[in-house]
Image (cartoon, rainbow, N blue to C red; front, side, top):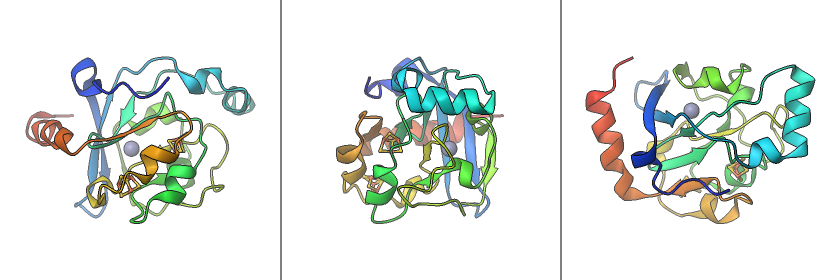
Length: 165
Ligand code: F3S
Ligand code: F3S
Ligand code: ZN
């Protein structure tokens, strides 16, 4: 199913994903729910090959938001973005996705469509604030896992002043 368009109301901020450059960061909204990833044979097989549990993950990003429960690692969004907002998270931090809710990355992961480590990988909006609102990512995602909404910046700003680890 597509990302919940009202996720800032229906979910809570459960973490902050920082960039080592001190400029880029995004919030993570949870708790998430079972969606397309849990129904995808490729994703299920990749989780079993790793012996990792396929659990609800939630949404990374607020005004460029990727629902990691709907993301099936297609990669079209990563290829489509003209300003390199996204990266495959596992190409930098090869850990279970649930451990990415509160973490720090340096943004040096891969951004090629087929560069996923495997089908447990996810598109991470690591450079969220660089978005120029072209909407290409929203259009190309086969599961409609991405919502880009300028007015959601208010929720990002709110969380910036209130979120504490
Ligand atoms: Fe890139 Fe999507 Fe923004 S393609 S520019 S993150 S709307
Ligand atoms: Fe995932 Fe959709 Fe991008 S499935 S990798 S969010 S195109
Ligand atoms: Zn993230």
